[in-house]
Image 1 (cartoon, rainbow, N blue to C red):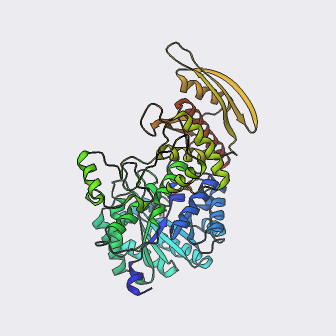
Image 2 (image 1 turned 180 degrees about the vertical axis):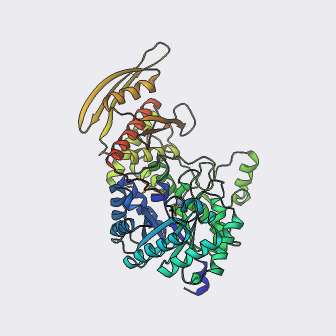
Image 3 (image 1 turned 30 degrees about the horizontal axis):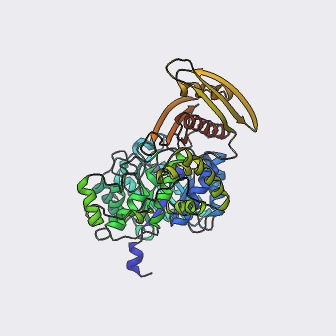
Length: 517
Ligand code: KIV
Ligand code: ZN
């Protein structure tokens, strides 16, 4: 690689599995994390932040397993600024072909006050912990959390200490989404100019989206010399989320004339990653989201449609196929065969093996019997539903019959299979969904509070499938369940049971105090 080419290369650090998973309700199971990690690894993500190993046994196992399976990416784990966290992190990431330890501490006045360290004491802690991490691993990333609200002199001082102690990447987080593009660039420029040794390490940018500027701030930092962008699929993350991977990657690709940087991302896998993360996190993508929203390539106004038919460039700055969306939408129906289904799923970004194809084909036929035309969005909902409901779930819906109408009471008769044993119950409620939820509650007692119940029609028409999301909270743990069906009440029951299954998994996890970043 020539020097100029190396200079243009921007590393993509994906933290969907760590910072993304910290969004309330976005907890993922081990299997789901492995599936996402594998896709990230295949699509060319340079560094995968796989989790926070000290946070729980589950996180530790996930980081370990991801480290074992990754073929191309560097696998990184997060650790606070203490030896115990760092040792635990190393125990998990050391299995990777290319491991990295990422250690951090809050350096702004507000964050220094929490451990009650003065500037000198914190500087000493940084020196000790980064040196310790470097003794274990030769790839160490250090982050001054809340860097954008840290005094500039102190920021330069601690970055210099971390570099001297052996950090190979210095990440500058805008933890609370407070900065703006000019300031984001200015910080990187200042550090590169003032800090001795700055030319020997890689600067990273990590932006949150509280003011909606995360992508702009990350790209501004790159213009000032940062060469690693930290981001998540769909911008998943706490509060307003993080820089979205798809946005920064496509911005650099489409506007390469003014942002002449390269990434190693295969952009044709972007839609697949977006759909997978939306499914497993339970955070649906907003329709008008840049790049991956349902409407990102839809044209409705007459003028736009006319222009598109004459020349797509009139109203599109990138082609749908660049992000893995197929331009034509072949409608499937009950006469479509297995081969057509497989090829359609491949077009939509779902590679399925023979066994999975058989399962999906059965469900596709059931759907096609109920719906005249099965659109792309129906198949996506069906695939997401198949991903969501695993055969090893402890609780499964076997049968549901609901009586509803103007004359109450609305009644749900339900059979659930719990740990392999069938249980039946009849419940009444204030409406069919309430009756169903009460039936589930009586068979799987819980004190969870229902935080969200949301229904979306997948396509148009009265026979459309409904996607239902259910968010539950129990003892500070938040989980989201999802399901899709042409019968809204069935989808509601399965979404609720999906959330219950996630809650059962969460109950087994132990989280040490304040193990979040
Ligand atoms: O936002 C933040 O500051 C973080 C750090 C742990 C890097 O996520
Ligand atoms: Zn963050």
